Length: 516
Image (tube, rainbow, N blue to C red):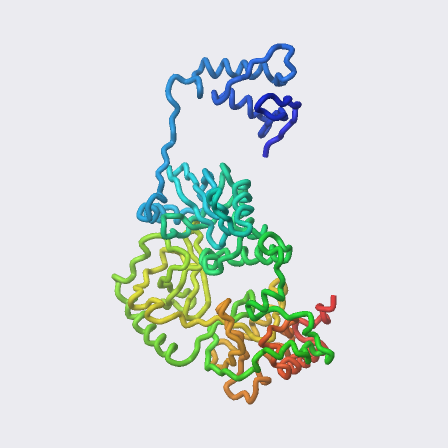
């Protein structure tokens, strides 16, 4: 931070507008005096009675005389040394070589030399003598006009101007994660410890690119910023409405007309007329993981996939018995890489994907793609995975993302969510079950399901219902379109919720907190 003290104004002259004259200091040091002392500026001469003279005019003259006598800066007889930067974005080959080095480092100091667009920059990395084209990962920024005859995308110029104002010629820090196809370096840029991508999304000047956001590990932060921008109707979201988005995506929003006269939250009107009836779609499954932060599931579909997985795991175990297959990775892994990792709980090797890296600790958070659980492993413990034998092309990841239909779990800030997850682990984990697939959300790659014991006689006799009966979840306040077609199921669940409240079970032990 700097301190600016306005000394006065210089009247406008031919070719120049009126200007304010100021004294700028940083950490108690006058910036003008520091420049003159270093030989990077000279002093404008004034008469004794000139009112435009600086209050420290005599000190400036003395500093200039000293800098001249010592041959500093512009007063030196030698030409100034210029730092030569190597342009590593000149070709993809050069970019990949530098990528290996930069991806091992975290929060690399850099300078934004030029803002090419809202999400694309030229940055200088002084300690590496490197010049890079840097691209913000996880977002899509609208394109600005590239010339007087070009037309910008909506909010493209505003996005470019915002990035230019915040970043041009500023000190930043960068995390490099990948290369694009033309030699650019994709990653996260921080200015004053804030993600530039997050700032753009918060202002409604960029949208989240889901795949690359997940790959970078910043998805939660970016999606939260986008939700904030939508709610504030900022930038490109100025005409956003939840109803319109729900209609386009087919899920997650309940119109205000949904509350029916019968008081059970299921409309008797015509709002469901266009919705298809709920039909059974049973799948034999085994739940392999329950997310402790959300209550969402990972399960395997029983059948040829799990049979092939068992066969692959036998070959996998044999593969790792050979010493020549026990060599560590050749370099730092990248987010999205599929590797081999030994699960700490059972000492068995499994296929795993890199979710995010900690370059200082040289560790990676890995997700076991056939089971859905995750943990942090040191880079040295990971092994290369021969794609032709064990990669996703050989057998697709077997862990399927799923969520329990009709339910809303307690907030993560309460202890009740842990109780809900513990209950689900007791009744569902590692057991053969039947899942009715109520809805396939292709946008989020998520199955909404009702879980049943193999001997259950109807969809009402579900594990979803048991969770509600135990007071460990409530019926969702905003029913999704596919849920609104199941009036009988919703009524049954709401009755179970009322009983749980009356009995003060689980999350209702202190009464109905949702009434506040």
